[in-house]
Length: 513
Ligand SMILES: Cc1cc2nc3c(=O)[nH]c(=O)nc-3n(C[C@H](O)[C@H](O)[C@H](O)COP(=O)(O)OP(=O)(O)OC[C@H]3O[C@@H](n4cnc5c(N)ncnc54)[C@H](O)[C@@H]3O)c2cc1C
Ligand code: SF4
Figure 1 (cartoon, rainbow, N blue to C red):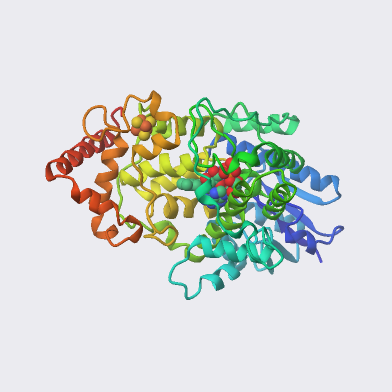
Figure 2 (tube, rainbow, N blue to C red):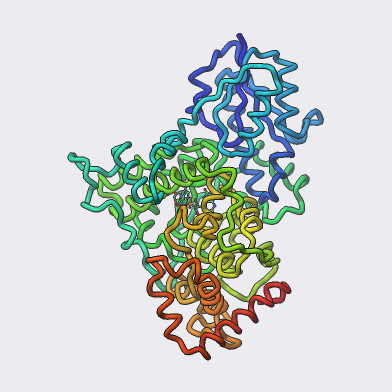
């Protein structure tokens, strides 16, 4: 019996359950680059090139190991343009008795599979994606009957399940589960990122870069220079580099932001994790080993492991628990259009300009810039969550809906009404000034709230808080915010709101800000 194994572009791993169920001489692997997938969002050119090059490298690796691979390139004249048509074609040619799949990471693709099962008249076998450390069912069970789905408690369960950073009595090493309060250092004066790895481009990558340049000339973002790892051995080099050179300071400067320094001590591993080139458990174990051997401090190692064993698994659980409604949530009824400067038009607000410039150049911006600069701005100016979601899904090389949607709709915009975060991540210019050196070269002043020089984040922050007082005033974590607001004189509050309105009006006109 021949089975056709359909492997998607974010499933590039020999640990995929398909391979445990594979008959080498009879079964066939289908992989395809299709325009439908490459264009359902306005993907950054680097993201498209990274995924296609990694897919081609994985297919080559499979062929070298003797697997039969039916691989359709985007520019193949016979390319039919969509998963539906390519699967139909492959069924006709190979006449399989069964289609084997590992569950897709995104709801959109899951909907397609349901239709295929109905329409194709052929049995499907769908494997659980064991590359994730918490299955959808396990998360559902954890979430059942809980009033609040807080990361911290989920994360502790995951630590216990995988015995990560636990002592012999199953207590957290060091006595605490979480060292986040040690991980908020402001950047040092003149701080520079250590040098990062740039991988050689082989024939496959060069061909893909030409293809992307030809087919996606209008997409937002710079295709070159292109430094990404595109196969497992290159991704492992990056992982080792991170553990040895960067992890020791990862915790200290996790929230810091520095002009012209996009990476600082961040791992840059999300893209590789998300398409399967490295596995979440192996990188957590590498980090744990660095701590046990005294090569990295606990605050850094725990902080890093929490991002992967905690946040990454948690957001996936939230996504599958609440889709398809999750993407429709709009708790604050936000409806403003995304300003043009998100797509590269210059803004004089240095923090936003910097985060968006880095995004354009690298298809990357680190977490705090995504959350506290672009996300915070979208939150306090009331931008339509769907437009913000579309932007984040397009512009980052690591963006896949299962991880991007909870981070955007839940964490950054609080549009889910607090399912993910116990309070909105709204902040004024003072926070940005404390955690970055951006404000030093900005024409606005983070200490001023009203007037021409006032930092827009300040009045917009208060305007957001007062506009949503009915929804937020009962929030215990904001208990100091509203008394501070009401302690200001009526006149001062009025001036702040008027200042915010000036900025909002400029944003609506796409005037320079
Ligand atoms: C609005 C918004 C949108 C985001 N969109 C994406 C996205 O599309 N894809 C994506 O992978 N991450 C997304 N994130 C989470 C996070 O910003 C990125 O994972 C991180 O910046 C990737 O860079 P890094 O590999 O250098 O991470 P590091 O800072 O080195 O962190 C280590 C790893 O932890 C994981 N991680 C860290 N934070 C999160 C998180 N909040 N959720 C899930 N995993 C996390 C990632 O796998 C990351 O590689 C988003 C965050 C926000 C606020
Ligand atoms: S002053 Fe305000 S706008 Fe300028 S960089 Fe600082 S936070 Fe951003």
